[in-house]
Length: 355
Image (tube, rainbow, N blue to C red; front, top):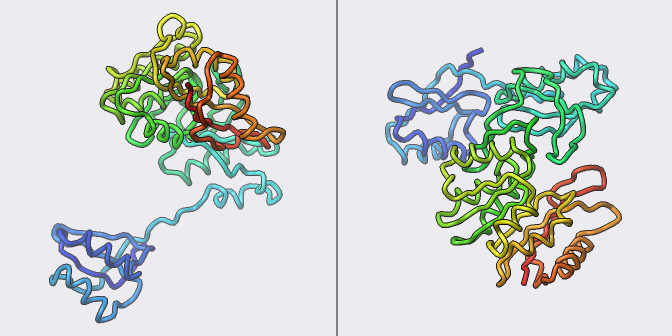
């Protein structure tokens, strides 16, 4: 429904600066959409500007005029929970999931058993509340198997599991049913990419669809990334993603077990190793150490901890395992909790300088 409002009529070439000034003066009517015609932009105001405020805007352009115009109201952001308030029994509203993963235009949500009868309603509400989402998937199993996959049920929208996901300056083809991918690790992918130095050779031992490998290759002009995964679908997506981001010449993809690939091709070949397979990474520390150059390098080690052990315990365990492999943790460069993966369980990362 159009609403009449006072506004500033601003020549197009000055609109961006004037809009910034209007924001600064807390004059902008946030409920209405800025509109424009061929020559002017019309900025809706929430009140009459004072003489001094109007003078400040006219310092940007003397052609600014105070006017009155009809504006279209902005659509209010409504959460999917609000949309369900009249559709679900009140005692079930507290069970609605507060966290969900957005991968490209796919939303992944975990529906608790008590809400199983309302799956379709929940899916449709999520679609309505998130305009960039075209498919809603409900988790239908735990993450299992060598490839860390889970089953999904489509509960709303397009029946698909493949999408294109954007992360920082990169794009990724993803099929969440065929290859493991977590958008919750996006900050970690970027952090590691920023740590890599120009001229390094990097090994991603459990590369998946390539979020670490592609970001590293995209960020650095002179770098070589070896990306290994046992899942053939993941490797195919990794190759597609390298081409999509135009970094295929910097990435060498290997299908197979990291231990075997390193033994055959990468002993003493790299400066940095990424070990993002938290449930099994400790078993591969010895071969990761062998992949590092004789002069040493850096390992980014991921594992799980729970309420019975601490980050310091994980650091000590890594140091002991490295020592048993014939090398030494020279120092811990960095460590932190990455994310909670279950009640009282966290994924952690430890960056260690290996001598």
